[in-house]
Image (cartoon, rainbow, N blue to C red; front, side):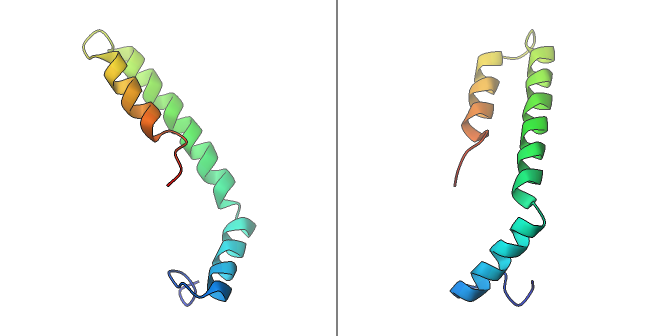
Length: 68
């Protein structure tokens, strides 16, 4: 991994992508992202009397399921 990660060499990139796929990192991140989103939305709802809910929902939705 250390020899391949961060390289622009296509063979090394393929090796890293295969490892990520074997470890199911995309699925793990998706699960983490969804549970984090739900937790954040619950926090927003619980504090909405004190804070501007719409602003926080707008910010969360800007980063949820984004692609770089």
